[in-house]
Image (tube, rainbow over all chains, first blue to last red; front, side, top):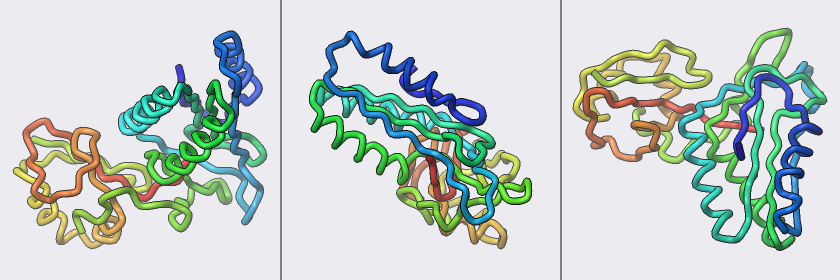
Length: 146
Length: 73
């Protein structure tokens, strides 16, 4: 599957090696993974995530179509639940025959992921989940029912 | 009855509502002070598509989702 959701930390080597093995003989010239690692900051022991799958799947499919038009292909893995510091919660990757297409696509994809993917982040502080409200972005049309 | 889901940090049980449009839902929530703070920043999806109009018609069995600000990665 091009979009994978995992409970807890991502097994980075397994996932990125598996994706590489899937595409290495398909004549793509570039494979560009982006690996997000949870930082130890502000006294957190890690992060935690909720995901709303139906809209995430639609969002990802729209991006996959966009990538296909450029001859590229996308992969993404994300954690749900708790992810300790210094482990990974997010991997995105682009494969493409052309390096420049892949570099632009990974940037645009990750930017839009941050703004649009229906995923909610919590800081883990003293064993409790604290919604990362200040770091979150309101979705398109927010405030409709206010 | 349509179903209303409160996603992520909203952390509320789903409810069922008998409404004709999102306008009706807005009126229904008007007295819920705790929810009002969230409604300012929540987007709304009907059957998993984000919508931008209060005139959006709601049918029985529709699913309405309230989505607070997001932060993946």
